[in-house]
Image 1 (cartoon, rainbow, N blue to C red):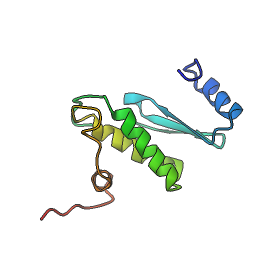
Image 2: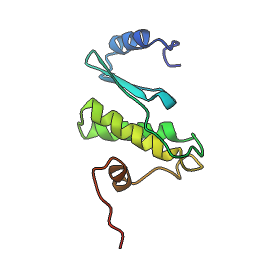
Image 3: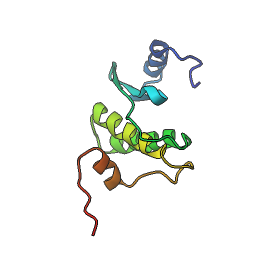
Image 4: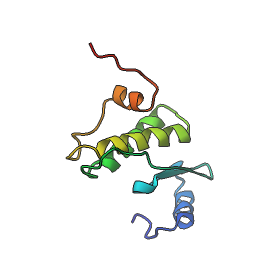
Length: 117
């Protein structure tokens, strides 16, 4: 919508023209991609157990992408993290009720074990 096209090549040309360092493209059930430093990196969508409501998935993805950028993560890590958050949000009704805490995301990524007492 921003550039009036859905063609990836045209979108990345606009990104170059405007001097963007990163351009994230959300593809819903097909995953996501990021264009940065002349390279296009793609990640498939995360599998979900149940889709209750897709509202808020994009917001969750965006929050994950911004967090990754602020922490200077590499692009693949950012996409994995952002995709995981988006996939977690769709399992809950509402636009922000399903946004997970960091520990929950890390657990789903297999990077942390949560211990309940």
